[in-house]
Length: 82
Image (cartoon, rainbow, N blue to C red; front, side, top):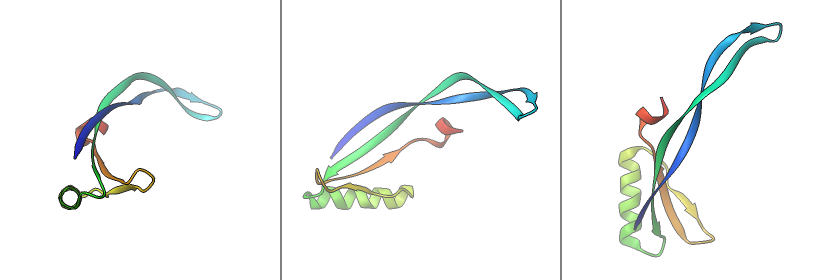
């Protein structure tokens, strides 16, 4: 089982006024947050069972890459995306 992280960025929009087309928003700073990816080889029965159990407890779905025979979940904290 492997654990990797990656950084994603989400722009934060600020209200900039209204014109004839409607409300306008400008992009301000970008918020960075980390996405953790826990993956395992599908041939490893014990690791796959552990991953499925963990995904059930966290309430996330298990994704499968059948070309590479890998099962994985991606997790991000809720504070990071609010």
